[in-house]
Length: 193
Image (cartoon, rainbow, N blue to C red):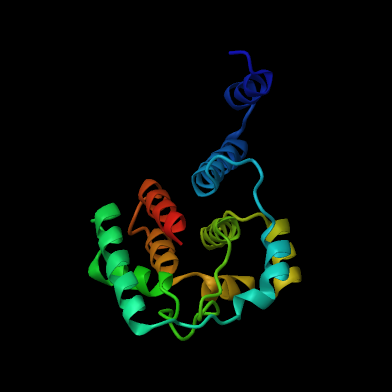
């Protein structure tokens, strides 16, 4: 090995960590693995608070729905692509994905209704923070900063998530899918949003 930082980290883990430190390292590894999946290996993880402030006007914007025939064609094509790329999804999940991705097809309670979409990197960062918070692994300082900047941020994030993201996150938090399956499904959803 030629990476001195890695050697130092491994030395610390193998030779000096107590039980509490091992738990902290394990949580950090899980979070970093999730970030690598969500952000495609990028080391530049976006700042969701800054991006949320910049995009606050766009989230509630509306986009015209377009012609009904065109929408139907796009919906059919979307359903075919989803079934081809993720055949394990249920009919309800396919329906949620279709409604989330087709302009004018969002749930009424979604703040992104009418076509306002969150950038992929922002959405991925929000998912990471929401999941970490829900599992109790989000740092206190980060959680406090989010509360200071955004108020009741977990509720705001949840409402901003497309329905398919809500389904996947909910399944993961309730231990209905494991981390590997969660990362795979979130990756597919983020690629197609």
